[in-house]
Image 1 (cartoon, rainbow, N blue to C red):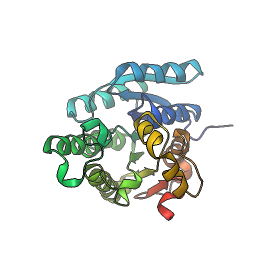
Image 2: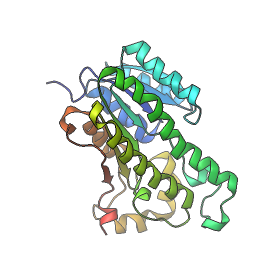
Image 3: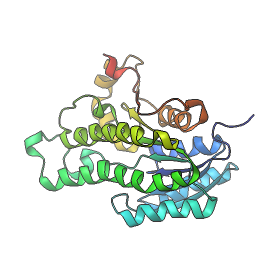
Image 4: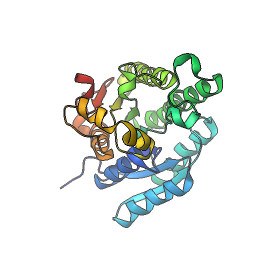
Length: 255
């Protein structure tokens, strides 16, 4: 039985762990050849080893999504290795604790922390789209999925710059979807809720009961819950879907 992404070439940023790693694995399972990019090169290599060990095809890349030259190198490497670029999952991102802003109210954030959050979580997504789109135009189309968040849909206490960046990612997604629809490029976003990853480990330890108590499905999500949605959105089965932001949150935003 053919996979959802048979014959496709995909680029996944932040593919060294968590949601990115699981998405790269699912894309490979569904028949894609996958370029796995991560700031931490060893983690990308581990993901690639898992894919190739399971009989898929993947290559590892490293770089900083906030630097145009690095992103261009990622795109060029995927095209050089596999001849084209059909799908991109722009997933690389950081949390407030990674910029020394955990638990801080809006007025308590430092300018440096705010700037770094916007640089990675917003500019990084924009740079990826900017440099992926020309490669997809050369193919006559493609599909892009950006990682937003439930924080792109609602406010969250002590996460102001994160919330601002994720709201902006949804705006970028909708605008690009409008601009490139006539060129056969679909652009969507996924909005994960509380997913059990390295990024949310401390949150799980401190607030698991409160979070799962508000979540109708009663648990943290797993990376695979996001990965399956991304693979679907990149596939031909989603051919009439663009400009959308999908909540994958166990019902959290419905409450």
